[in-house]
Length: 329
Image (spheres, rainbow, N blue to C red):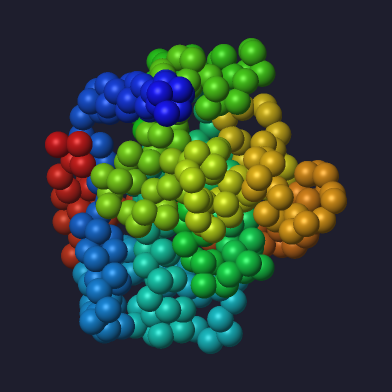
């Protein structure tokens, strides 16, 4: 019993050290961006079983810029609905509560982080292409495994690397060194972050997702997308996000921050191989069937990123556009 206790203690110490490092880093971050008020309210309203389509549509309609972007995406090839969707309430009826919630969250994130610090090795457009590509891959994988998870898998993919945007904004020198080291030493960006900063973009992103009070499944997908089995029982969204990230790297969509290709957990690969004796490259090639076509339907999201919500919509306050009170306050 004493021997077992001695074995457990180093693991506990390591976990405590990681938490202390994360706390030291996050304490340096003042005024973290928050989600727009309408989106935080949207997450709450959709989570209330008593809410109606009318309640959700009235809430979204208070932000005309958000309304316009949601309707633009709802009418795109990404959803492929044959009739024009002219109102948010009709979008909810056709697409469902969860889809509209996830759509609103995705659009809000694109808006919140459309600009910031630059580095010669950090291409923001390539970052978003990778993020949206991962969301598309997640949606495609969820369709094959559990259609109910399509919307959440898309959002998890879009947000999985959100911690990189925090690092480039609040730790530009350190993150720049991470990018340099990843390139020169052929490291993964996460390995370089561990060496230079002491925490990874995944940990930072998970912390931000917690501050935003996102669902636990999204928090875990962001925090553990590189190593799902850090958790004893990773859920389906986390497994899909890990595979989606590998699939996106395999197809070289955008940039993940380093020169390495797909990195796939053997245990996650085994789940998707479903007992078949095939190597990872074959698996990734099989799962890539139809992926490029899916990417084309998602061009509406890259178009939105390019538009950058140039001006606040009517009925949208400056506070909402700036993000309201800072999360880190």
